[in-house]
Image (cartoon, rainbow, N blue to C red):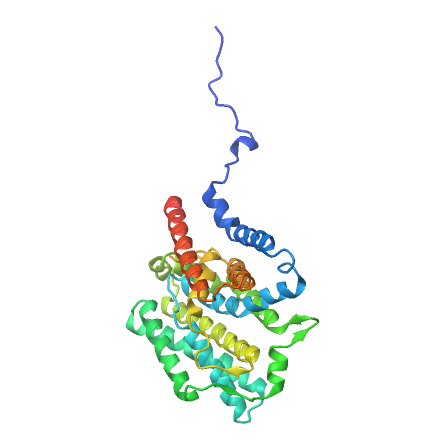
Length: 332
């Protein structure tokens, strides 16, 4: 009688490999793929101008403020929140910085107090209001956006402020080794925030809070403290963006940053940040900001009216959130 071998064949490494589905591929490479596609389209539309060194630097320069705002917005979205006041905080911090310099304060001290510290305070106000009222950040930041804009108009008398220290614009809006300083500032801030999310306990706790707030609470993570921290980060980024914007335009405008929250949200969402919290990367947000910069640049090259960009950004937000929802549902 012959004896049959009832054991199943041992799977080979090749057989045990699971092919990544489209959802995984999209979440990993989708944002970069969009950027490459936009570069290809833009190069075809304007082959003699788009890929020149000066224009590419201009794209990075245009993207610098958006990357700063988007990095701050990224943290609020990471906990399934949002910050609609980043544009108003940009205007207010820029105006406070300009007013301080006009009063005779050294520009570097005005940057620290009027830009960074003021942004931190404004962000902390947002976070404390969210914690105290337990309302969704959408409601709180919608209200504070109006308040901060109103304060900006009051302290400026609805007028531009200019004529401050020339060293301020030369330092913040100048160039080092041919590279515009705003680009350096944006990528230094992004690198610092990337380090926080990747290598610190704070970053891990923020991801955990965004993934499941109740589970994070029972794990000993202070929900209120980390909610406050993400809004402080958003405010600090908006403050730095306000300083950069004021330096680039050599004037503090009371209406600066109007509608910038849309571009910041679009940069974060297009960059792969889940609108439902708990997933996203700073590197993706930077690429998302560059995508916004490329779109703006090619529309300017084609002499398309600037307000059409609002239509493009709105459509991109809807598409990106829809794709994210479909992929999140599929993963679950």
